[in-house]
Length: 87
Image 1 (cartoon, rainbow, N blue to C red):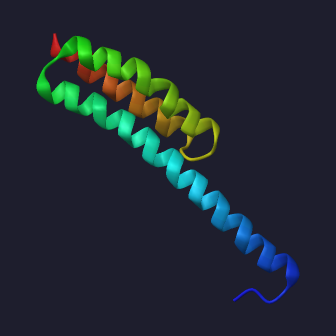
Image 2: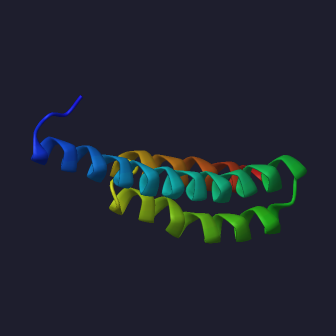
Image 3: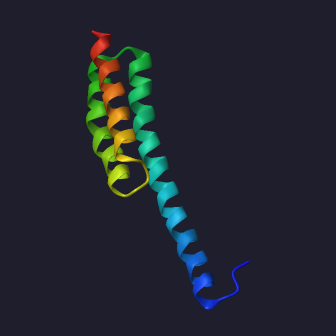
């Protein structure tokens, strides 16, 4: 357990940051899940529309440090490739 004043403060800061990051990751995953569901349903227009909304969320997660930049780019790329292949 933290025993200095600064260490105790860092524990509080880390807890707060973890809570924010968890919310951001959850929000991003919700948007990705909507794209996945549209792809599974076979609705190309709905999937494309869902991806249009999910892409900024995925990139925002990367900019905030929740995801690595390359991970977010890979997610967007793979989702768009799956939508393109639906044709």
